[in-house]
Length: 131
Image 1 (cartoon, rainbow, N blue to C red):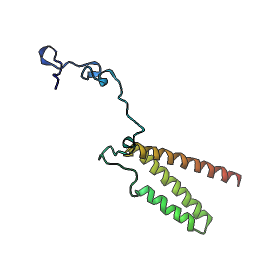
Image 2 (cartoon, rainbow, N blue to C red):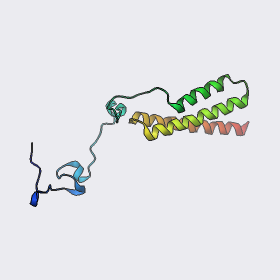
Image 3 (tube, rainbow, N blue to C red):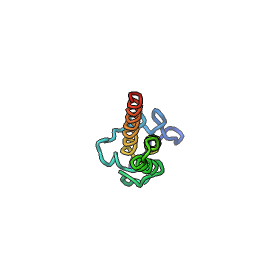
Image 4 (tube, one colour):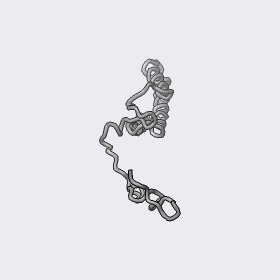
């Protein structure tokens, strides 16, 4: 072990930004992380385990039920309401993943789902205007 640098009076000397001198952090250098690593993409930041998927949460259950209703409902109005409900719940799920996803994979998945959801809403809006 190396001794920590001492200043007069026994105080620890600090570099810029209050960090120990000679370290990359003392000079504001961000250490490179390998984003191509599967470990980086899938490692749960809270438990340390790998997380790719999980059991459906409340917004995802709403999406599943609404899509089943949209498929089996005989009335066009009910199908339309079910699809809009599914889109709203999917946006809720995507926002939750973007803000609280346990790893970069889940956050990226949230962004992708949000983009697809917005795209489908724009397409539905255009189709309703031309019909």
